[in-house]
Amino acid sequence: MESEMLYDLSPVVRLYKDGRVERLEGTEIVPPSLDEKTGVQSKDVVISSDSAVSARLYIPKAAICSLRKLPILVYYHGGGFIVQTAWSPAYHNYLNALVAEANVIAVSINYRKAPEAPLPAAYDDSWTALKWVASHSAGNGPEEWLNSHANLKKVFLAGDSAGANIINNMGIRFGEEKLSGIEVPGVMMVHPYFWGNEPLPSETTDPMKRSFAVMFWHAASPATTGCDDPLINPAMDPRLSGLSWKKVLVCVAGKDMLRHRGWYYKEILSKSGWSGVVEEMESPGEDHDFHLFNPNCDNAVKLMKRLVCFMNEVK
Image (cartoon, rainbow, N blue to C red; front, side):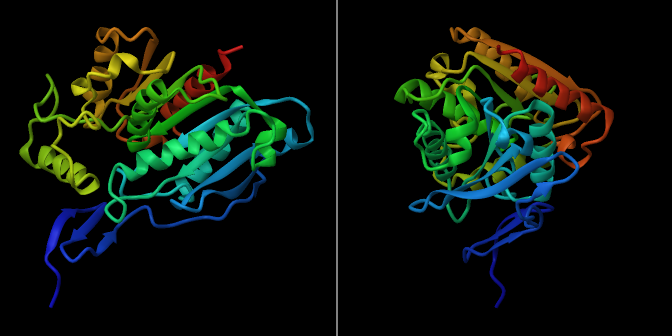
């Protein structure tokens, strides 16, 4: 007898009442490598065997023989907390290109996914990973690339979609728990995954689209109070003014259903009493995560340049 479906989130994933998960995308993986096109070397590391947190590290090969310390980019992948991994081809290729262009060391986090590990597992894993990076501040951490080649006074965070949502959550937690050992001059949130019960002005009111968004969030966070949960709707978070990031770049795409939430995040940050600086970039005519799947198009090249400039602006 076939199991009854709990959430049909096609074309992304189907979840069944017996616990079975049928991921329809984001399952392909590629191994770490020396990428000949970019000259970037990558390898996989285990961050915490307790919670199965791991990461893919990227470094320009030329940096391995250099005494110069490079900034760190901690990257959180997207996928609605349910699909994709740090080993997905789109992320692997994008990080190779970004690392080469910005001349940084990247730590691409592979956190546990829902529904097998519902939220807050992804947040907890992302925090564990940040603490792991900070453990290299004295030059005697578990990873030699970070000990020898990383500047922990320049740690940037970036993420797309759910990864951008994670960055907001990390900013609140960083402010509350005062993680020492690293300095974060800025974060980059690309097409952030935020939502809310009530439509924003100009946001879609299409019942099917809004229902899909609600189901996706409930699939990732079964214990949620709904789409006004502060984890998905930062406007409802009284702690937002305590966001510890000094500088935030929010990037949105013109055709993305989540575009309005990105603009709204800038607005609520500015009004919250938060003391940092927020910048925005829009890619006209593009849809969600377009840069990962069409990295050579003009708007993807412009987005890449903006991210690189953001990191290079810090002297």
